[in-house]
Amino acid sequence: MAVRRFAAPSEVLAPRWLAVVVFLGLAGIPFLGGDYWTGQSTRYLCYGLFAMALSLVWGRGGILCFGQAIFFGMGGYAMAALTKHMGPDWLAGSLPALGIAVLLPALAAAAIGYFLFWGRGLGGPYLAIVTLALSIIGERLMVNWYAMGGFNGLLDVPVFSLGIPGFLPDTESPLPMFYLLLGVAAAVYLAIDRLLLSPFGILLTALRDNPRRAEFFGYEILPPKLEIFVLGAGLSGLAGGFFVAVDGFASPTLLGSGLSTEVLIWVALGGRGMPLAAFLGAIATRLIEGELAESLGNYWPLALGLLFMASVVLLPQGLIATPIGCLSGRRASAPATK
Amino acid sequence: MADLIPLLLNLASFVLILVLVALGLVIVFGMMGVINMAHGELFMLGAYTVVAVEGAGGSFYLGALAAPLVVGLLGLAIEELLVRHIYRRTLDTILATWGLSIALKQAAVLVFGPQSHNATAPITSTFELMGASYPYYRLALMAVSVVIIALTFWAFRRTSFGLVARAVIARPETAACLGIDTRRVNRLSFALGSALAGLAGALVAPLISVDPQMGLGYLIPGFLSILVGGAGALSGVLIGAGVVGGANNLLTLWVSPVVAQIAVFLLAILAIRLRPNGILGGRDGG
Image (cartoon, rainbow over all chains, first blue to last red; front, side):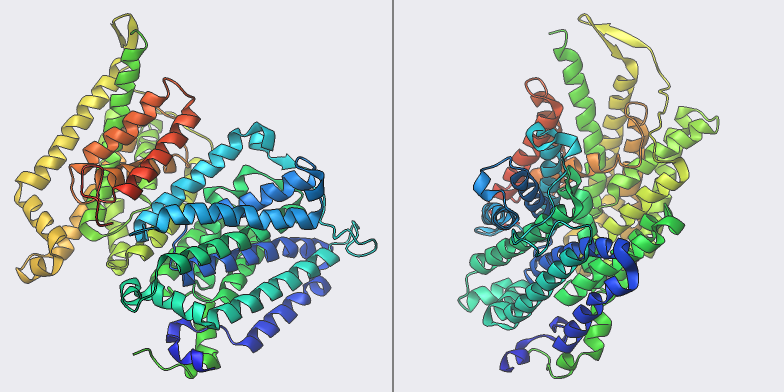
């Protein structure tokens, strides 16, 4: 509890009771929406996980990454290729493949992150342009990598299976997968919440807000920045791996600038500094898109772009995080930093 | 030799267009600290202006004259409605203009449809050069680009507007204290940068397919050019665009265009990382 005194007002986490309400509320979706919406919501939960990863990297790590989908897609392709027996057989199960889907992007992020951040690392606009270029490179590579399906991607990815007979079977019902992902999302959220309240989380905030001052206090900048980048990449890979197992399809668009942009919008609309708001931002945007896509058609991306623009200018903390911050008891108890 | 000449001429015309795009970007970035991610869409709208004017029965020349005007006016509106509110929030300018670029792209889809369009070049004749035939239009394009680039440099180096503009870049507060209307300078510069993008789009419209997604293909090389050349000085753009655009075209001698583009992006990233002040600048900073 003492830790909270160091949090700046705009940086407070969502109250835990709200997280409980949100996850319990999401658990009710299958009762309201039927099988179609349950299946869709399972995908949205993957996007929500992905958004939480970016809110760590961007909102907390201060790394404005225009290429976060590289890691999502990498996890997705790892999952697809391994479960389709394109790799060694002992990795072809859903769980080992998921492990690789987390590890591979994390290793890639360690290499990319080290290159970008050592010494007087790249920051701000430079980083945004470079990561955008990287995401385009990734997409081009996958389009031209014919062993990985090229432009068409990898089709017919096996459904997720824990390998326990009778449990999470390959049934037609989307329910088991939905609740599995809801459980994973809740567990990940809890872990992130604890991490951000730990001394590491405070150090991250300090580094993001004033790297030079943190450096004068004797903290090294590179290790925590690299750690949060790698963590975010692993989490993105996890989301990508699950997404491909649910969707049954891995394509170059998973890596590209399109999805990288979308996740930025979800996180910005939700609230970059508050993982729960980012998570909700992704789910809400996708739900609204699913509902309105037919009636609005081509006007939807136009509206989304303008909404994104307006929220950046007028409510930079996010459309969801701002009200949560106002009603949050944690905000009231947090005095301004000195 | 016969296929080297067209290659070099293509290289030169690509580099010149890239310089036009990057000049607009660097004016806005250097002067206002605004990263305009919608610059590619301003370029796209320049091309669409030509398509629209030709579609309405006008000539290419009318379209090419209208493009910088239309896009420049749009730039004025963007500055007034959006960019003005987020000066000094550089990272937010990236996000907000990215949102604008999505909206503009979709607006183009709504108005012109998702399919690609073609503009017709005003000059269709070709000439023979050491056994290779080459369109006159590309030569005209290069000449116009060189003139516009020279005019831009002249405006910033030799006119009183340029002096004032460079003062605003160097010390915005001091410039304001000395009675310079920085709002007006910013507004004009943003409109000028936009107009350059619109003109570049209009000039290449007959050479490439005009579609809503065309902006990104010039935005990223444009940005890489100014970062490789060093974002501080206007002349860095010439070097950066020469390196990025030149390497892109030369590499296609040996490898496929896709590989060439990936290689150029990677090399540019490497250059930006190792030489944050530009390849001719110092090692420090960033």
